[in-house]
Image (cartoon, rainbow, N blue to C red):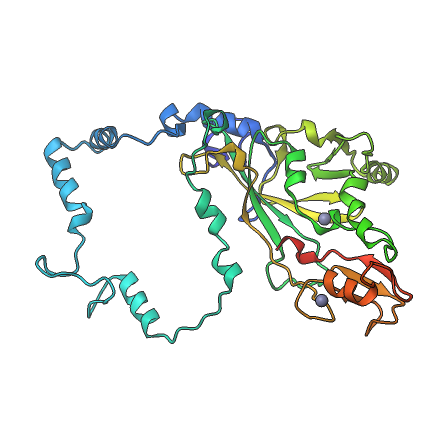
Amino acid sequence: MAASEQPAEPSSSIPDYEFMNLCSTPFHIGSFRDEWLKRLKPENVSFQPGDQDSFEARFAAAMGVGEETMTELRSVCSVDSLLCHSGDQEPDPEVVPPNATLQTLTHREKQNNKPQKRTKNRHDLYVDELDRLTAGRLPETEANRLPEGELILTINIYFPSTVEKFNHLRAHTTMLMTGSHTLADLRDAVCCVSDLQVCGEFSSTPDMAPDFMSKDLFKSAYFFFEGVFYNDMRYPECQDISSTTIDWAKSHNYPQFSTAKMEDTRFLDLKVKVGYPYLYCHQGDCEHLVIITDVRLAHRSDCLDTDLYPLLTHKNRLVTQKCSVCHVFIGRWYTTRDQFAPSDPCLFCDKCFRMLHYDKEGNKLGDFLAYPYVDRGAFN
Ligand SMILES: [Zn+2]
Ligand SMILES: [Zn+2]
């Protein structure tokens, strides 16, 4: 919707392009929804399947055609009339008829003549599976039904990359969230391996390691949208980790930033630009780009079960580091100053690590330091 068509509207409720095909101007998500609901008729927003008869009646009225013409249109446009063989012939759907003029058929013929090359692995094959499985899904109980007129946002979360390669798409997850979700819900939906890191040396007590996850120790985090830091303040040990940046900005005469709580902020309350990179920061310095790529009203073909949101529709896949002994399992431990290891530091899977470094009773053998390792591909 171009802003020029609605000159009377406040610009902050209807987005326009700020940079063509790149990002929109900032707008208030809740007001944008209200603008849509004001303009649409209830049946446009309804999740009830449209009535074919009333559709045809409206179509006939809009086009100014009579019942006779409608009957003719119905038969001409019917699926049964789509034939590329004579009526008495039994079609073989596998065979492309000679001299086919349909683009789809010529394309298929080309594909058939090409030598088959399997380049897709199971990850690529199932990349859209989540999307397909949940389309039009109805809830088991009415209480979980997505309300009509609810907003759906498409959000990409990008992962920090150690390799600075920009010639390919960077690892990201895409999820669908509703307008009533809070930023804290988004935070909980982001699976980042730095939340799972375990700090400390555990060579004497390897079974203790899982109790020291960073996620449980360091709970502070923030999102940054349009000059506002949204801090996670849900737990008593949470700190306002944006204050350092705000103080720094103040002392350098930058425009003032403000703060809010992420658990109190719904997407409906946010003012954002669609397509613009924002920031999610947790575990001190683990920074992710957050890009809202779409804001729209829910449709009956969407997943209508609120229990399934935030709905993951794309997941990044990262290369995993394998154990340096068996080369089969993903590394779980790395050791240093290790007399049994071929390198320093050296990565082991849990099984090889314990077999090499402990006796049957679990007593430590020899001298080494052991640190838990969580692979970047832990969420593959
Ligand atoms: Zn992270
Ligand atoms: Zn191993």
